[in-house]
Image (cartoon, rainbow, N blue to C red):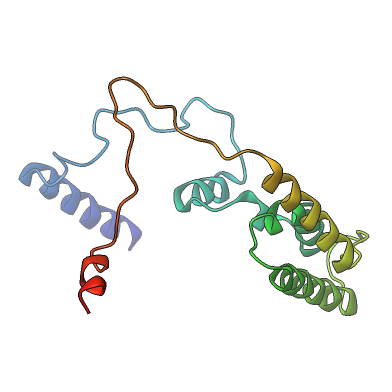
Length: 161
């Protein structure tokens, strides 16, 4: 039974080769990727993450993901516009941490909720420091004339009335 099946498959492959169905396949004449590299059991996970442009943090267990997010809080809240938005961000992160603490799974890693007042204090000092820096101005060169501020198209209409 298997010999007959194999013979039928081989006949179909020979027919496809004769018709030229395998001629212009992508990657023809190129080496097989990873051919000389040692075997890696998780090659398909790594290729999936690379192909889909996903961060490798998704592979970490929940407590390590939460701990990494706690470490990145100052960078994530730096550009938030208001104190309330910073507090909302910290509250959302703390809700995820508390949900994990209620039903821990994965490795035992110490993860504590973030102190919102401390994050707001750091956010304020960073914001004050950025406001004290002089704004970056474009140097006026001899080839580029100084730019005048643009006037809105509605200004002439407003003056008529």
